[in-house]
Amino acid sequence: MTSTQLPNFVREETEFTKLHEIAKGLKASGQQFVWVVKKDESVEEGKEEWLPQGQALLLRGISIYEERMQGKGLIIRGWAPQVPILHHKAVGGFMAHFRWNSTFKGISAGVLMVTWPVAAEQFYSEKLIAEALRI
Image (cartoon, rainbow, N blue to C red):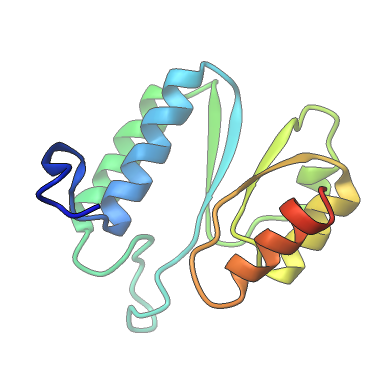
């Protein structure tokens, strides 16, 4: 379909909109969560920037979101210990981008995975795991 066929559904999808939608969904779910926001690798060394370049307002937005969700969710900036988190008895699911490392960790932990491939081989990995292997 083209943008003229579905004009109300077309919008620019940026890192900001993706992160904003995840934040809204987590809040609306009412469930406890752990959300890892990785540091933007394109930012020069020594500068603390946790979201894509040009999205400085989003950083402030995440901080406000953290305040609102205090006691309900945990936002980790940077690296997170995936294995102990995924093996914790309170974890019921895992949103996976389907890079091999995190995919294997999710499978070995036996948690449900929501697929969200972003680039490269991740789409093939998702298809293999979800459709062929039915994991």
